[in-house]
Image 1: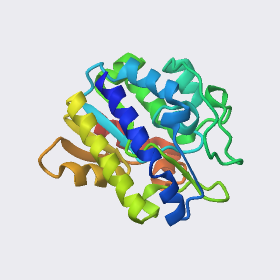
Image 2 (image 1 turned 90 degrees about the vertical axis):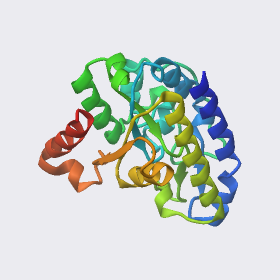
Image 3 (image 1 turned 90 degrees about the horizontal axis):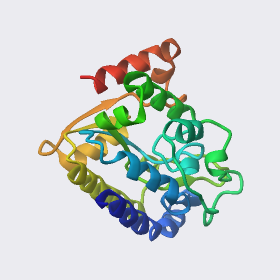
Image 4 (image 1 turned 180 degrees about the vertical axis):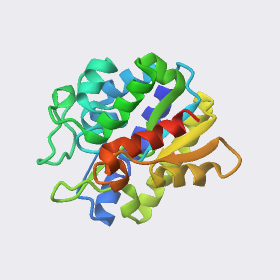
Length: 239
């Protein structure tokens, strides 16, 4: 399966940069869910990547309570287990943060961003199959990046030669995913994802747009108790 092979290639390339990223930046821990939670991620890819979606929902990178636990972009463990039927096992992350342990699908805390986004997708299309006939989810970067305190660090807040190489590798993977899945539209979940897609494709590839990020740290996501966020994302997805 081409998409599985592409994810494995991305994982290995990113692994080679983890030490350089730690040495050059404020990142103290860089772990790779495509390694330790590979079976979860492969379960997502094998079930849902070939259902015909022509719109790609593009995220930034995993958070400690979402994809870092369940291997699914914007994942939350209850969504992953009970709705997406993700299966598999995980191993202990190499170099994991002691304050951010991985419990896999049994992790109890539910990632708010993932619960919001997948909840909206479920409301729109009802079933996992219908969702993935319309949209497929990918993170630009697969690495979980944490500071010494356990704070989540996003790729847009770090720089250096290793980070530059990381971005290039992830850009190449995005291009590969679009080619494999014959994607016609990319919706960046937040401005960073939109910028990466625009950098890769410019005006010569798929249509590129953006929607508001579901993070509880975003005022837009919380406005009117989330109603404005839901309206924004739904209007873009159904355009």
